[in-house]
Image (cartoon, rainbow, N blue to C red; front, side):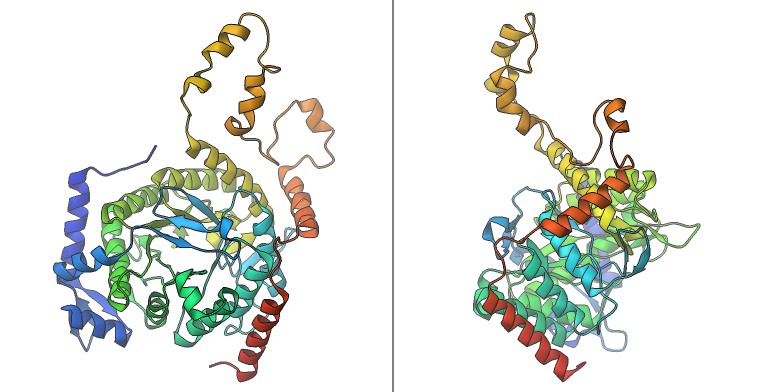
Length: 476
């Protein structure tokens, strides 16, 4: 059921245009080690502008080294994620700077919010990865990443984000995860952190993100390279032009990672869309975002790389009709495009600037619906059910037949909050509004959910001691 907007000839044209960007326009690289690695491999770099032009042979050779499959592990290995094996995984929203609380008030995010989002993510059945839903504003920025990682391991058994911005913070994130893994070698063998090294559009690899990229590549942690191109703002107005520029930004990151360590797990990624020309803001819920995601996923397959897209987004300020419509279209289109991993699938409002507890719970049902659609239709002697039709169709109802009992749980998705039923039953509900019911459900999950298995007490103590030591040393 893959959505593929491009013909083979069109893919070749996009690839050829990207090579032209590498060889003619170049990529601005602001991290000295990355520049040295590129030059040693055969690229040319202008020392005044930091623009590197990369020959096609270097691009092709580095892409050969990038793995087609790998795993991101969790401390409960049953919840580890396989990349490159054709399965779509969903994540909650990531690093929103503010939250919509259960009282409906939007405010700066706190450490308590970060902790609660990890608890909620762990409890929800249809999200697969616990991202950093929000960025706490009540703690020093240099400590926030370590506190997020600690909360993630303490309150979730799903896979987790890491932190790879700048040398010091990146190494600290690796140290902290190594406590859980049992050592740095064990962490490299079974990576626990998902890194983010966002290129800066247009055509720039920043110093801090590239420092983090290098450290994660060297230590075997998988890394995403998601540009947030805005068509008409930081990229060409045409979707094809955006995809060419984005392709160069992503592949430049992959190239640097492979030059650091051949076989470094790299994920072809995007969170790009159009700029709304009326407001100057990115429109992540726009139909064009769906097309960008479909093109991104197909290009990732063209290069044989695992992929990450974005879906479930909306520009709405609350979990209303607009939010539901935009989240549903962007999430379903991204899933049908064939990504390995979809970020922001639950909890995003206001172009992912705000994380909503209510919408996280509502989007869990949406993720479940999309997963059911991705399962497709099973056609076998058992499921075509000719014997059942023969025995029941002209004589009575299917409800009591053993075939129904055997198959309905697998074949039929049952939402936890979306209403199905008669009006008479609906009118008797204590909370009729869907958002109100989601608030009650969220409160219940936060009150009753327990992470299983819990983080080992000794590991928790060592992690807290490490964070305390970093806090004592102060901002690097």
